[in-house]
Length: 123
Image 1 (spheres, rainbow, N blue to C red):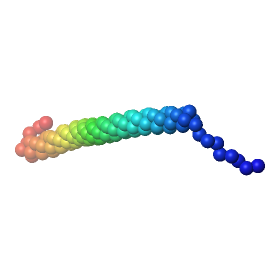
Image 2 (cartoon, one colour):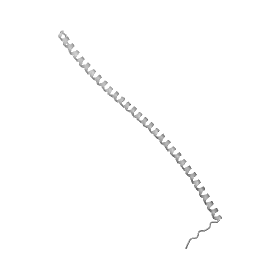
Image 3 (tube, helix red, strand yellow):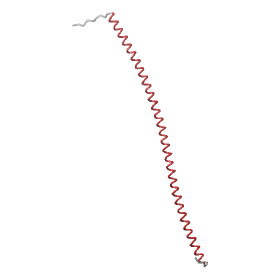
Image 4 (cartoon, rainbow, N blue to C red):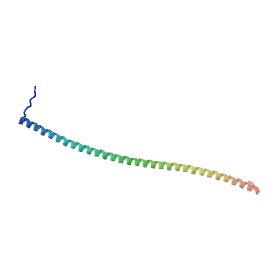
């Protein structure tokens, strides 16, 4: 059985023409929608990049602040340790000075007693 080609009528042609125009309109609409989607995506990428740059800057600032605070705290601790060590040394020097003074006093008293005794005094 052989297929017979159908002859197209003007009505068929008009319907096909209408379908073609509808398809073109759909394609143009889809193209506009895709342009809108691409523009939204680009705006989103820009916003994400800006947000990322802002967060990076904030993180750097926070890091610098934390490092500065840690450095200040370390210096403060070192100063406190140095003060405590100085106080220990001052106290040790004072005690040693008092011991030395007492020792010298005892030596002077002993020598004074010997001298007094040698000169014939009684004590």
